[in-house]
Length: 388
Image (tube, rainbow, N blue to C red):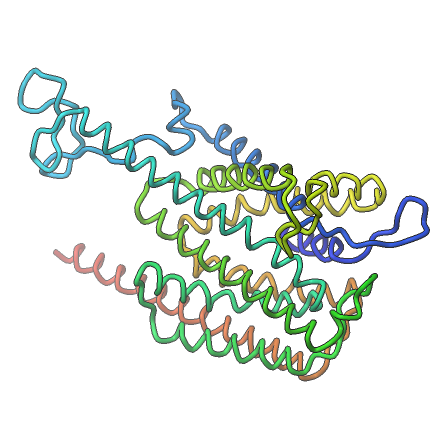
């Protein structure tokens, strides 16, 4: 699914022919593209949640907003709402009776923190997407795909800085190999980004530097998103699809607000002038360049379906496992991009790509070894229990 999404993403970065066939222009509204995808993603998550709903579920339950602070008794079993007496205004929390009003306030506080966490992710995503899209005006798509492979670096960095997490030594080796590989790839690259009007600056070393800076900003914001999602899963009992719905719903609301307001020109984030809103410029472009509709629809639809699997993986295995899987997919994305769009890679670039994916292989091998060791330990414990 995401291979089709990647092909559509690269197609959206090149010029489109106008309806009169006289000129070609690039579609610059990353905000409009992001809004289309986040809207479809929130709808697909809501449909998935509704189809998989348990019987007699409330709306709050379906959206993951209830039972955020479950009440338990001193022995760890669920309370029935009574505390050693006939009164139903108390519940047992760790063996102590507390009023239901206190529990209600606690739930409200948990709900507030959960929604703020979703909003924080949405802000990061809304800011990150335009920088990733803008980078394609200065660097080639294979370069960006491989650059995205450095996502392990900001994910680990943000987990350490924001949430004080620590990682196994081999993960730092993986990060070093990935970083070295992308550096080799960039050093030996000689292909220019897709040509279009005003593209001369993007083909200069200064333009390449701008593209790398935009990509780094995109990666840092993505790393903050992944680490925040891990924190939400560790603190709240929510499903991947519930998180997908809320984050994309907030992204849609933020994008619509930014896209409809006549904001002044802001490089990357709001390329339109203050006299016209971002969405008005985007709709005018679609009318003048109807060939943009098909890749835009493909990008939004495949991205929405692909996110269902992304959030399922994120919920059960965490962001680092998700990043490892995603990087494997990026390898095939890069190869497919080379084949479909006839990109030319030098021998040095292939060496850099091999170094990156060798680092990914180290991560996969260590994980497989750990899983095998755990299974052997579990089998030994079962054998001891049977012998007793």
